[in-house]
Length: 256
Image (tube, rainbow, N blue to C red):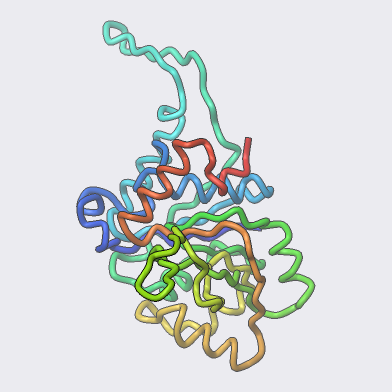
C-alpha cells in the first residue's frame, strides 16, 4: 500500500520559516516533520510514498535527491574531487514527488496524483501532523468496514490552561485540560481510489464537498484514536513538539 502525503500548502502561519521553505520541511529534532511522518508509516511497513508538492516543492525534491548525503559521514577530497563515505543510514523508501501546483487545493492535489495509485487503496495524510496511531490497525479497520473512505477521529486537548476556582479563590491550576469532547478529523485516512471521482478539479477542497458527499452516501467510517495526536498549526505547536523530542519523550517516535 502507498502513503500519499500533502506537502504543497503555503503555511502562512509560519511566515518566519515558510518564506524560506515549505511547511513540511520545518524541522523537529533536526529532521523535517515530513520525515517524522514517513518514519511512522515505515514502522508499520508502508515504505512507498507519494508526496504532493507545491509551494517551494523543489526544496523537498532536493532534500530527497541528497538524502544519502544528509544521512552519511563523508570526507571530501577537494584535490582529487572525490568523496569517501564512512557511515551511512539509508531508508528502504520509494518516494515519488509530484508537482501538484502551488495554489491547488487539497482535493485537487489528491486528484493530480491519481495516475500513481495503480488503482489500489492507499493511505493519505497531511504533511504537518504527527501521531502514535497504529497504521496497521487503521488499515485493517478500513478493510473490515468495506467503505470507500476511513478517517482518523481524534479528541484534541484544550488549548489553554484552566483555573479551578472556589468563589474568588484560585484553588488549583490545570495545565492542559480535556477539550469539549468533540471528535475531529485528525487526518490519517485510508481511501479507495474511487474517492477521486468525487473531486472536480484543482479548486476542490477535500474536506468540503468530497468528504461531505461520501458521508451522505454512507461511504465514510471513523477510526477513533485516543492516543497522541498533534498538528503543527502554530509556532507554539512546533515548540511543543520540539520540547517533547529533546526531552526524549516524543510519543510519535514509535520506531527504534
